[in-house]
Amino acid sequence: MKFAMKVAMALGLGLSLAVAAPTSIAALQPGAKAPDFTLTAAQGGKEFSLSLKQTLRGGPVVLYFFPAAFTPGCTVEAHLFAESNNRFNQLGARVIGVTAGNIDRVAEFSRSECRDKFAVAADPGAKVAAKYDATMQRPDGTMLSNRTSYVIAPNGTILLSYTDNKPQAHVEKTMAAVRAWNAKRR
Image (cartoon, rainbow, N blue to C red; front, side, top):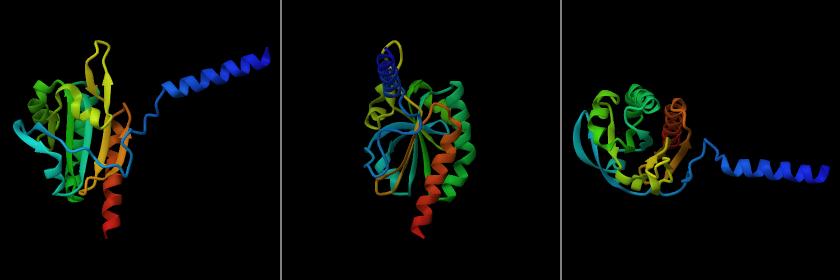
């Protein structure tokens, strides 16, 4: 009886670990090649076509996926990235936010919550998010982007991948990765 109980507990623990994915690891790991994309984006409320490949020509990119514009966590995250945007720029990096939710409000979100500081791209159907393994499914079956951040080197190599539902650590983690990249170049 004791043996059966131990086996059941071990199987239960293993199953719970398999179901509860780590919150600090995204599927595309450092060293992988970042999938290229072109999306409609907005900065300061003005729409334009955003190409990752073209943006990488200017230096590293902090690419962060978020579920939906104007939700509490996504608003906090946008504010945090906006407050840190000048520091990212001083390090040669550009911030890009991408969402599969509320894509009709991206221009407004870029102006109000991102404070005109960085581009926010609309990802209809979460197609780009899927390439980055940064998706989650709503109960109604709709795919959204989950809260995952990447730092991508100018050559397209992923330097950092970080997934966590809490928005607070994303800026800290991505800033550290950009600083590390700059330090290696010296």
